[in-house]
Length: 117
Picture 1 (tube, rainbow, N blue to C red):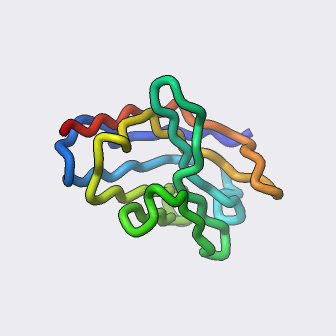
Picture 2: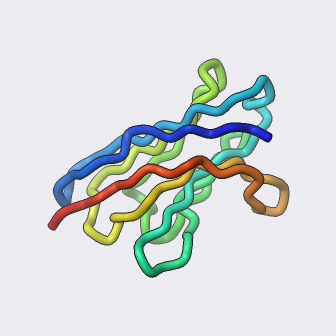
């Protein structure tokens, strides 16, 4: 099972930007579909973004146009660039490996993002 370690969370003011990174273990990273989920207090986990090995992206409606997912196969990393952050983006963000059918195969430990108004 692939190990995922997130970094880059923190506190930012509304309208600001943050960049989350996820480092993955193993030699098969380049064929994995990867993604980010988030969970706010008292809410269910929701899809933020996914990125296939072929470069196809998918975004949750609430982040479209503001967030960008990318990957570096040479470094086994996936990145989430978050711009124009809003207080409602406050959540724990999880890096995931996405399996066929959209199922999640592996979860990172999560990184906290807090957006102040």
